Length: 336
Image 1 (tube, rainbow, N blue to C red):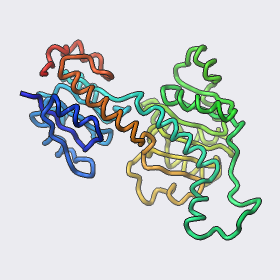
Image 2 (image 1 turned 60 degrees about the horizontal axis):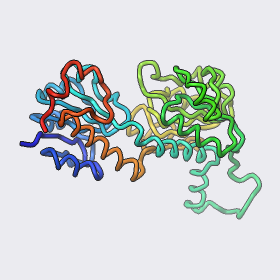
Image 3 (image 1 turned 30 degrees about the horizontal axis):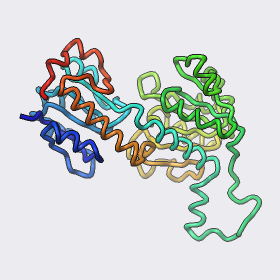
Image 4 (image 1 turned 90 degrees about the horizontal axis):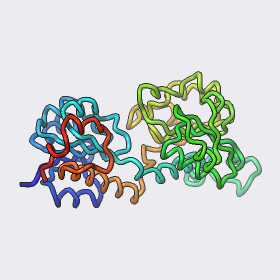
């Protein structure tokens, strides 16, 4: 008899086929994320759960599935899962790091360029019929990117990929991270480590790539915005709560910084009355930095393979809670 798995949303190929080969699959088919009670109902009697970052997986949901052996998240982040509770229950938690690195780094640069060169405003001028003068020396003036200074906050996989792309722009690249990178990596990237305060003071563009945790919650607040150049741009493709949105809105309104480009928000979807919506110096996207066909397909494949590996009693590709190996060895969760 095949183990049973609940999938909280329709995911692209090839994940569903991988799961179906080894498991009996029950997939939530709604367009919107399932409510907590729907997840609890769906996971009841299941051996495995494949979820998305929009699904809060807490102790109540785990309690609804006493046979649960693995929670596989279709995401690089896992703050939506109570990992400590899962570990205590002997449930393996997996995720999909690395596979969306290049897509997210590309999009960070897309946001940076769009903000600096006012691409969204220019698009609107043409599409709304407001292009009245063929060419003018002061129309939609933006800011140069080439030859400027880029500050990367968080030099993990994505931050590193963003820094690599800076070379083509002859940009001076500096970074801050709580753990300094090896000197060999700094040399390879042609990047210099500086304290956060110095990075904010010197950067023309600040690109944020830190995980959301207690230490990074509202890492950027009014104090940080006052340290930045008045001509600087802030780009965020990490997590919304890393930035204090009220403080950022105030900084933009008071012209403490020149602009921002955001793919993530403290509340998602963001409210229609969010002040950023009506600001011309802010470029907004609905959390789509990893939204390429290739990246999402790989996320699907890896999340499915992680789940199946655990049920086979094998080490998954990416395990969050390695401590679980001591609490409930893989041999005890093997069902395939």
